Image 1 (spheres, one colour):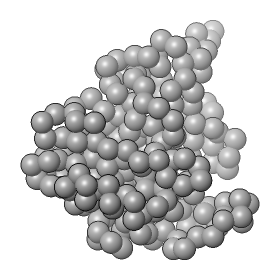
Image 2: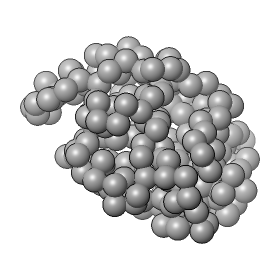
Image 3: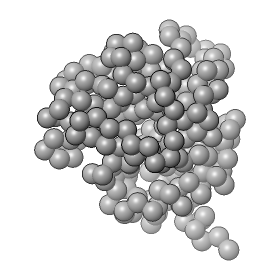
Length: 221
C-alpha cells in the first residue's frame, strides 16, 4: 500500500496464528517502524529490504504470543528499539511459555524486555513518519493502538473487521475493551483505514455502521 508518494505500508501474515505484521516506511528517508512481529523474523526483515527501508523501531500492540515471537529475531538483526506498554510486561516475560506448552510448539528465542515503555499520547517517530500511541486496554491490560496523521490505525487485536478482540483470556476485560473502542477509536475520522492484527483491513466508518459489538454497545439503554 502506497499511502503517499513517500509513505509505504506493507503487511505480512506470519506464524501458525496467521497474525498480521506491518512494516511502515518512508521511501525518501529509508527508515521504518515494524508493528507486531509475531513470527518469521527473517521474512519480516526480507520484506523491509524489499521496501528499501531499515527498521528503527519495533512497536507492539500487546504481548500475546502470536504477536511477539518474531521480536527477538528482528531486534537482534536490526538493533531497533523495542516498545511495549508496561502493563503487558509480565505477559511478555511469561505468557509465551504458557502458550508454547498449551499449543505444543518450540520457541527458538524468547522476546527481550522492551527498550522503553510506551504510554498514551507518545509519538513514535522516524524521519518522515509519526505514529501516535492510543492506549486501548481490554484485549490485554496493556493493549495499544497506533494512529498516523495519514489516516491509518494499527489496531492490534482491539478492533477487527466486524468483530473485536477476544476478552476471555487472562487480563481481558470486555467492558474496558468496548470503552476503548467506542470512546477512543470511534473518535477518529470515519475514513480512517484500520489495519488489524488479524484478518482484513476495514475503516472506522464501516465498523461504526455495521460492527455488531459496537452497535449493541452504543444502543444499550
